[in-house]
Amino acid sequence: MNAGTPGSYFERVGEQRYRPTEQMSGGWDPAELHFSPLAGLVVHAIEGHRAGGAGGAGGGLLLSRLSFDILGRLATDDCDVEVETLRPGRTIELVEATVRIAGRAVIRARAWFLTAVQTGSIEGGGAERLPDPESLASWPMASLWPGRYVASLDVRPVRPPEPGRGTVWLSTGTELLAGEAVSPLASYLTLVDTANGIASRQPPTAWVFPNVDLTVHLSRQPEGRWVGLDTTVVFGPTGQGITSTVLHDLAGQVGTAQQMLTLRPVAGH
Image 1 (cartoon, rainbow, N blue to C red):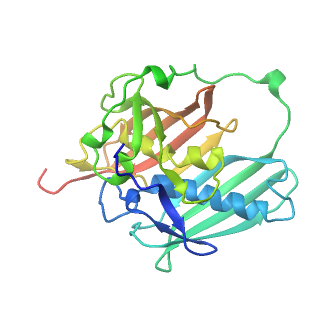
Image 2: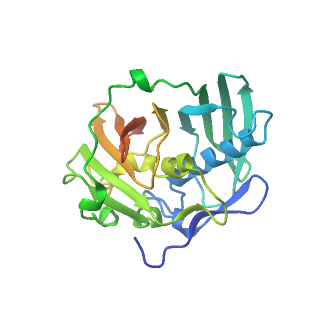
């Protein structure tokens, strides 16, 4: 991680307006925002919206699915995050968030919250735990990917990354939002979109393969500062690809993530 890393990815400048710091510069274009911390910011805004509602801070419901559609270019500018409850309920709730930059909608997200019930007696399934990240060496992911966001990460591969296959732990010392407490869930989801960069099938200097969406399903709520990504990338024959990830924390699997990719060659390659 850069020694000169700013303290946060965003600063609040209004009730629902956030200003990105220089640490948000993306891997495809330094003049664009990296989507990954923006996803964490959306979760933080959704949690704030729900805490202010009639159900109090969550009302006993847990985030179980979160889907993002990326509608356009994420320009380096202030972000307005608008949140509304589409389907209120005591056991199931659906919330939608829209991110606008310069008045234009660039992200739409929908979050399903489900009731919390004690089911530990039937808990089962899922992948094996990943090795402890403290026992692993850091990998300079910034040698492959430009942008200040990637440079802010501590990346610990479980095994050497291969084209289309990678398993890593991620953490960062950069706060999501300056001066505000952020939940473990928002902090965790700040890093999940990075999955598309840890197992590249082609060098990003020869091909661009940005994701147009991100969908996360959770079987339990993640904890701790480490995000484990066990990722497989598939490129199809007609310009589409899929990045599929099993999500971990130190206790084991917490869920899955899927990203749809659009594949294009870089000019001159």
